Length: 78
Image: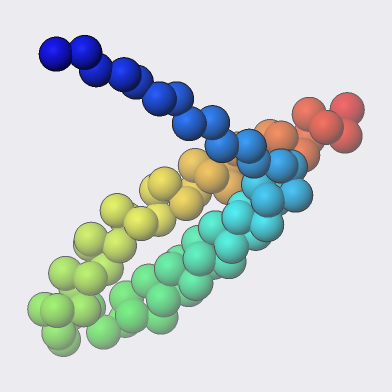
C-alpha cells in the first residue's frame, strides 16, 4: 500500500498574531479580575473555591502569551 503525505502550510501575518494576542490579554485580565472578585466568596461556596483553584489552568498559558507579546514588542522596538 502506498501512502502519500500532503503538507499544508498556513501563513499567519503579524497583524493576525497581534489581534490574537490582544484577545489573549483581554481574556487574561478577565480571568484575573474574576478570580480576585470571587476569592472573597471562596470560603462560603465550595464550587467557587474549586473554580478559583482550577482557574490557573487558563491563567498560566495566557500569562505566557502575555510575556511573549511583551518580549516581542520590546525586541521590535529595540
